[in-house]
Length: 181
Image (cartoon, rainbow, N blue to C red; front, side, top):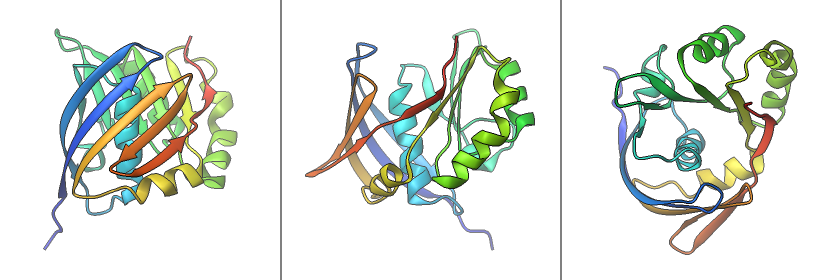
């Protein structure tokens, strides 16, 4: 019998001084059986970095034709497509054709660097693509914060991210590998 997703209840308070966005989101996040705590937490931080009242988690790993997070306009167009990990050139191309803005958050240390070396030349034509890497030490620290019920405070200022849960604080320094035009 197939394993079921584990449900996480997250109260995510975002204070983004860079975008002047201050809001609390109550999220119910389904963690796929094959998803690690590291990926789950990267997904939540990616949500915070792109936070908007219309932003929402998707089925993620359960579907091939959806990103991990998306934002649709009121008329149904895809405004923002957020993907995690190391998508193929084909997936990047398709994503950039579907959404006004695409943000990819690779992670995994040396593996992510090798992926970027392989695909970066084929991404130069996409003005709507942004690629932001998380270091392995940052994502390892984030993974240690994961619990089934979380109250996260995410503060973003000058591109730096502070994630706090209870008395634990993790500082994340996203590194932009490619900026959107």
